[in-house]
Length: 478
Image (cartoon, rainbow, N blue to C red; front, side):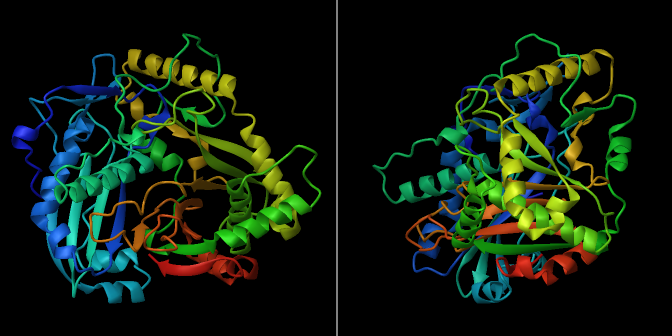
């Protein structure tokens, strides 16, 4: 492993803590990797040199001590993320001279696999929490490209820092780096990096008799047995991952199509994300059935839903309590292209189910169920919960719209990243990121990038689908 960052006298002096098992965030036990690719720039060597990046990362970490923390399993089996000044768990930072040029990366659509072949990434560790867990919560590798340009690879443990938080931190690091050239500049900590002493979610003390249909728990099997039971048996070599782009103008036309269809009643509306989720669900589910990787039938369609707003909580802070909001789509709604307006309406209507009362019951049940497992001496109770929609044996297709995360905001002083690339290993769960900025001086975008992973026959069927290819352009294969 690369050397840990040494903060020396800049190490934060006050401890910090946040409870992890107070909501659903603990269920996302993995590391999420990402590349940010920077074009050659006259100021690259000055602003993005190793000494500058190391010094500014120290400055950024000073204001975000939980990135120096570690998971602590308490006597009651609850877990917190704790920063102890006497025992910091510092991130790693390493530097690398790559034989690959920016132009070669661009020619291949900034394919993640190409960058990986040239050792510009890091091995992705197991993010499962255990009592002996002592990995850094953030790992970074900076590669200097042949002929100019930079690739910044980062990954963080999703339990501690969700996508919005980690990209907010990278943008904060970049702001600290720019401030090195302006000694009088001050850098404010983004809302997404605010620390909370307890879980964001409050528990009422109620103990609902039954849990929500979206979440399952099983104390009778080991975590490995659960993972095997909910994972479809597929050869790894048969999986294919691609990145597609769709323009915001195309989405606006789809949304207008829904509005003009007459499906919506007076006062009803659908969001762009609802329409996108319906469009993706139709085509991905149909590709799976056309390829016979899944039997024909109805499908569960789900979206990731941040619970903070319905629960009346401020939408800021590290991590977020997530619910996978489900609805059922009939075979006809999936297979008939003309059914898009009705499916978009169904997707939008399903969100109404997840009001404050429903979500409060869900987190109260989880809190009580977790406590019961802990008191019954179940080993590692935090590994016995899962979202039922993520059982890949079921006909489920999901969409996580992350099109507002600040993935292109990290300007270290030599321009914004020209492209970002991540990796989505989960089949039938499409991750939506913003595309690159429409103009280098702006963070606004005019395309979205869809990260799609399917079995090979289903991916072939999707790419051959004229309704998909009319709106979605292949950017790169993995």
